[in-house]
Image (tube, rainbow, N blue to C red; front, side, top):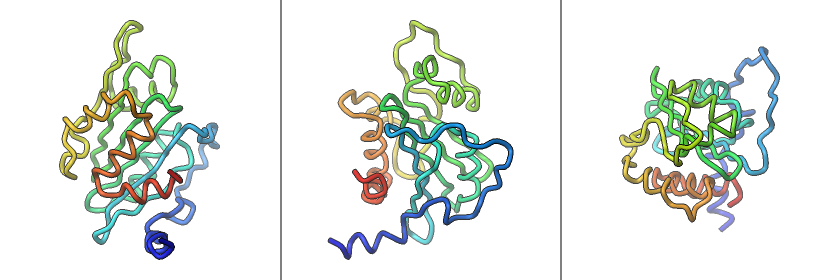
Length: 183
């Protein structure tokens, strides 16, 4: 078992070890809460590489970091906030794709509201039912179609970190994702 873990150590990195991103504009105002998950992943040389992101609430900084790490398949972020909802971000070339598992969370969470603003999506109404928004085909070229993402969103038995783990497994890096988060 130790050999198996050793084999993946080089695939899991901290962003501190990667190319530095100059961010002198504002200090981080949110530390990742215990219930938050923020992981970047990119496919390079036939394998997935993952890194923990330092602040799940700083969407512009996450996008900047993804732009710096992208490869031919782009870079993606899987983010869960406060055991309530998850967000997916993918940077592929100059295109940024965004997905939010529950738009109504923008009524209660500033990070979800900012996400909708960045994605140029409308705010939900107070009486709206929970619904996903954004690019449902965000990972279709990686083998995960819209119906699979919708099914994961609809599974009320799963917490957002478990939903992200299911997505990571479907994309082919579930073991590294679980190891990185200590699941």
